[in-house]
Structure formats: C-alpha cells, structure tokens
Length: 366
Image (cartoon, rainbow, N blue to C red; front, side, top):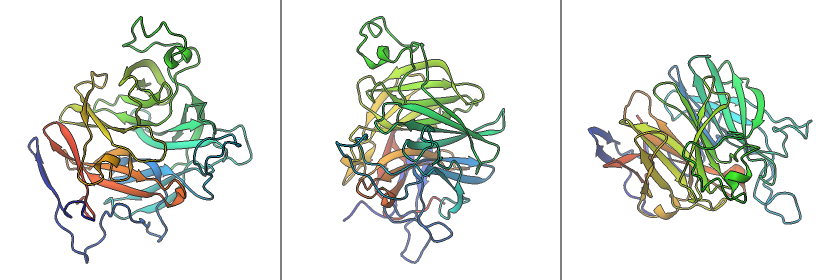
C-alpha cells in the first residue's frame, strides 16, 4: 500500500518544511500505526492525549488504556466501548522520538464509587497547560458517567509537569450564562440543548485547551449533545471558565478538537461524530479565537483521506524552536481492543491558508 513517499517537501507562507527520506537502517523515526515503545521497552500508553513543551522537554499526557475492553451491551448501563479508568499517563522526551514513562500522574480512585476518578467512570482526552502567573500545571479532561450524561470538565493541578496532580473536581462550564453570540431565536426553544442546559451548565465532552501568545487560556468543547462546538475563556489561573463563550459550527456535529496558531491566525482540526469509527477530518481558520470561523474542508489528501488515514485527531503540536512546523497527533482506535490502539503522527503542510496532511510511513521531526 502506498500512502505517498517517505518524505515530503512543502513550502508555505515563507516557511519551508523539508523532511528527508529515511533508510531502513535509520532510527528512531515516527512510524504511524506501529507499536511505539518507551525507554523501558513497553508500549506507550497515552491515548486521546496532548503535549506540553516546558523548559526544553516535551511532556505527553494521555488516557491509560489497560485491562478488558467492554463492548456495548444494551442490558448494561453504558452504550459505548470502554475500559475501566486507570488514570493519566505522562511521558517525557527531548526529541519526540524517545519517550520515558514518568508514571500515572492522576491515578484512579477504586475505593470511592462517587469519585469522578473511579474505574467505573469516564476519563477522556487529558490536556495539560502551564500557567505562567501561578507557576502551576493545570490538567483538564472530559469527565463523564458511563451513559455520558454528566458531560463535564475535570480539573487537576500540580507544581511540576509529572505531578502528582491534585484533583479539584468536575463541573459544567458557563452556568446560567448565554454565549456572546446568542440570538433571541436561540433562547426560545426550551427543547434545544443550549436552553435545556442553561441553568445547570453546558455539556462538555471531547475537549482541548489552548494558551494564546498573550497568556490567555481557552477551552474548546463538543457541546449541546455534540452538535455545536463551544469556545470558552479560562480564568487567569486556568482552573475554571469565566462565563465568556461563543457557539461555533452550530449543528455540525464535531468532536476531537485540536487547535493551533500560525502567522496570527487560529486553526482548528476536528472530526465528525461516528463513535470509534474513523471519518473525514475537518479544518477551519479564524482571525480571532472568537471567530468568525471559516471551514476549509478535509485537510487529508491521498488514500484513506476520507477516514483520516484510519485515525482521529487529538492534538496539534508546534515543534519547539521551529516556527511554522506542526505535528498532527491522532489515535488509531481499536474498538475491540482499546489498549492496542495505535498512534498516527503526521507533519502539517499548508496550501495557502489550508492545512494539509499526507501519509508518511516513516519520518523524523528533526
């Protein structure tokens, strides 16, 4: 199967991304879809995750997927594939190629069924950001019940990148607050999720957090039963939302948001909502984080572009010290055996303002 060449050269906006071909003898390299081992020789276990670059080191956080995969069962209290919550993993690297396991930085709480961290709950898409004012590391994740009705944000905080993180609890954002771009028509129908959830807070499922150049933080969430994306401002300490938020892409059914900034513009790569089955990615651009956002279509090109090369995005990583270079991070979910889900990482090129992803069997970020 040919997913294009083993190298890619793309010029965009005055930035040239040039990746050299790798011979079979050259290693290590990013090999999407393979098992990635850490420095102890064990498979990296960091699914649905995100990356933090801090003081010369990359920290990769993700869902720990261990144990039995439970398949949907109409006679049980859940409707989707899952494993028990184990916690949040953290790996460190200097080069994005060799990863050291720093352990479980937010372990499950088996003895307390009421805890958001109980194995029987849902913990997805952990992301960590650093607050330069408080000097704290803040972990956000999608916290949920087995039937996905809770749809909340979980928040934890630590003094160091590898924790230990102190769990502060979960909440729904923007309680009793209308979005800045709400219309009178939006407020009328009590059956819509926006109105239905006004008093108790808006739903927050797949999510990411983003820190802008000025130090302001933002939360992106799949909300309103996944129909509409919400962008919320974070408080100065990054521990909660301020109540300022907007609705974007109403009715488009988006999840797996990944956000980055290039040449003063804000970019989003997201997916459709097809459970564990891959679908075509979407991309969008805006001059302001509040919008208006303009959709740019599927960023993937080539064979299996219509299913994002059999993966779903989770994060876009700016490569440190290399302005204009970004890595699209994704998961290749194995719905029948979630611990065996693999990772797909690809460099992002640009055609004009549109981000472009092409398959590469092996490549190096150096």
